[in-house]
Amino acid sequence: MRNTDRPVPPYYLPISMMQFFSVKVIEIMGGLQWPLHVYGIVATRDSQDNKRNFLFRCDREHCQTLASPQDSCLRLTRPSRAIVMVNPVVVEVDLKVKGSRGPPSEDKVLSEHAFVHNHTGHRIKPGFPHRQLESTEDSTMEFVFAHLQSAVEATITVGVVEGSPDFRARKLILRMEATDHGGDDTAVVKEEIFCATKTSRSQSYFMLGFCKLSIIIAWSLLP
Image (tube, rainbow, N blue to C red; front, side, top):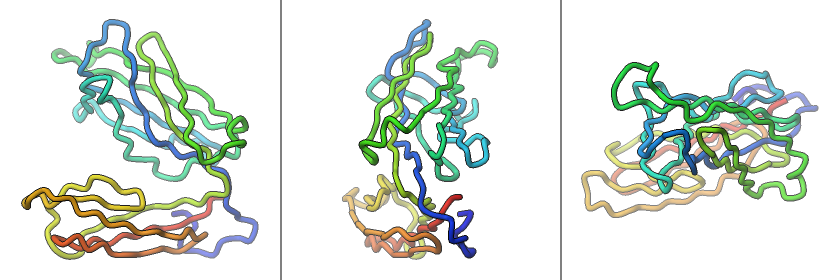
């Protein structure tokens, strides 16, 4: 939200960005066995500031369990800002598997790897998901992402402003699907189309019957 609430210089324009959809473990080697109790990081570095921009970050005490090859997607709770694709993007992976017993020294490596994505090869089909496999001696991982042309950054905030907060949110793309945790588990679906702007915020409300949600999207250009 760097430029959401302040005047934007006239030379700031929508630029190329990178959108990650999933990071998945599709094959394990080196004596690893399912289920996997995974912790560590998956991060990107771009030309914006060269700092790590985390897609996945989980410590050893709060690891994620991947049950099987059919249930092996990491929970992507980030990035903290949009990923700029003016120059090639570095994707850094440092993941380990927690042992069932013993100290951290007995944990095993799932993936220690880094690769560079040069977006020039995907300018022909911008916006279409691209699947890339990256293999190490311990695992093969699948990264699904897209190159977005003339994009702006969108930061989404969802808050309960009325009613019970005891529900399970299933999806939030431009729609919300939720069920009342204490009810009959019937799904309620609401959908809203937000038109992108260069600055400021867009707000709407979703009435789900058992509660009212406030949806706020903060728009920002990146230099």
